[in-house]
Amino acid sequence: MADFNDFNNPQVAALPAHLKQFIVEQHYEHYTPVDHAVWRYVMRQNYSYLKDIAYYPYIPGLQSAGLTIEKIPDLQEMNDALGKIGWGAVTVDGFIPPAAFMEYQAYKVLVIAADIRQLNHIEYTPAPDIIHESAGHAPIIADKDYHQYLSYFGSIGAKAMFSAQDFELYEAIRALSILKEMPDADQAELKAAEDLVQYRQENMGPPSEMALLSRLHWWTVEYGLIGNLENPKIYGAGLLSSIGESVSCMLPDVKKLWYNKYTVNYSYDITKPQPQLFVTGTFQNLIEVLEEFADTMSFRVGGSYGLQKAVESKNTCTAVYSSGLQVTGTFTEFKVYGDNSLTFIKTTGPSALSLNNKQLHGHGKDYHTEGFSSPVGKLQHYAKPLESFTPDELTDAGIVKGMPTILDFESGITVSGTVKNILTENDKILLIIFENCTVTDNGGGILFDPSWGIYDMAVGEKITSVFCGAADKDAFVEIAYKSSTGTHRVTYDERTLELHKLYRQVRNRRHIGGDFGFLGNVWRKLQSDHHDDWLCSLEILELLDHENVEPMLAEEIRAFLKHKAATEPEYTKLINDGFYLIEHPVEQKLVV
Image (cartoon, rainbow, N blue to C red; front, side, top):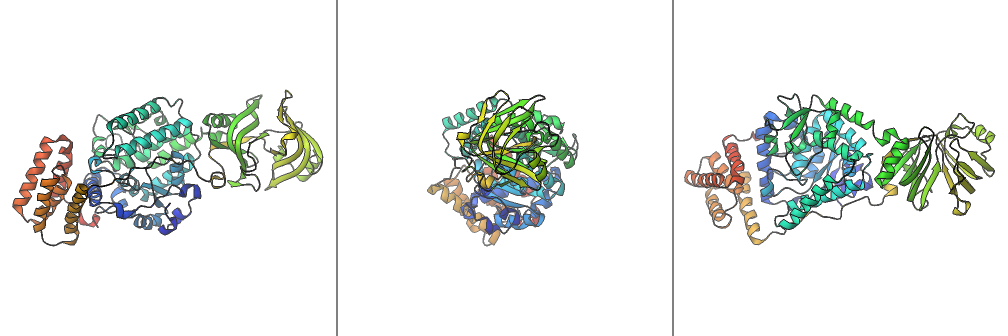
């Protein structure tokens, strides 16, 4: 794990331990000269096109985020720049779980994949890479309305209910993205991975809250447009970082629809161009749509609705009593009566009790190892909720430390035993702890037996909120869910290392200067040993053309590239766009 203190960024330093585990070293020295050339080509293309079609803060946003066109960004430089607007950045290993990704946003920290796409995926990669994450997400962060939306989205997304199918799809997408970035990927294995993603996408069942939120995230943060339907501007990072789709998305065959609450009904496929995009008039509209959706989520609805979602998720969830007590565990059962009011909740396996997202002393999962259960509701014959009883009212009700008592709930649940302790906080009763306790339901069924030990009864009239994950994540989960599938690390053969050397020589000439004569030798070496390469040849042509030297060599290279563009369709647009950049160079102020 990277030393997050090295970044000297307050947002990064404030990250909790369960998020720090995803941070990896950037290893800037691992980027090859080809990698830097890929970055430079994409960024120059982006500037050339996006200066006219991107939402207005994009170009100055590059500088605000500590980015330049000439080289892959250094994470420290980005943190220095982003820190000035209250954000930070960390590098991670490819896709991380959606809930963790959302939580990073809530902490105002950009998650940046440390790797960069291969040259043969220069236009688009389904895998997260440093071009997408930094050149796509970071520049727009400077816009105040947008970064407020981003962090607010993260805080809501971090509470969203997710399902086992969500994790299965995440793993399948992560595995596919890794394979697609492997230069020697087995085609049969790649096809199997693609089929698995498609199968899991088609067999998700009813979408979870996280799945629905991911749609809103996709159609805004990743693929959003802003303005009007006739002439929108790009602000979504997926479009800003794709030199292919940023152009094609503006064609008439890509439908432009208004972004509203119904957008959540549109699913997406990360492996294909999008058939439609959504336009918002303002970033404030994004917040309003998000707020309307959040009102339907378990963390705001609570009650039996939220508990049902928790049971269905089969993941660690937290239920919050109206007293403020938080119960964390895997919920397996709940009971209702009358108007569907909750009467009883139960977790199975390690559970914990917290208040204000801090675990209560002595009530961690090492104590509640087998689960936790407790009534919900008011006592019979009392209009006032038990959590709000004063000390005198507790005495009048016979709830006194060291004394036996019987509590009859409106639901018909009965708790009888000796009061061992009463835990209160801020004039709210959180727990009543019993010895020799029996708990029965309205049919006489046993919910707790004295032989099971001490009974900790949660106190609260209602369950006001239910959300996915632990209340105190760092105390409950030593190591959060993390994929065991690592991204591919390329081992370069001698031929590829030689190509890196040629790219480095061209790059050094552009940065350091010197004689042009050796560029002819580089070109001849490319022709003899690396005839498939086109980008290094394009960079040599750029140097010769701008300095107006070696015209015969320049013409020879130009003819080679024109022939490749005419005979190899996969290179046609890339090379022709490169010619355009040579004729229309990027402004120098954005290069360094």
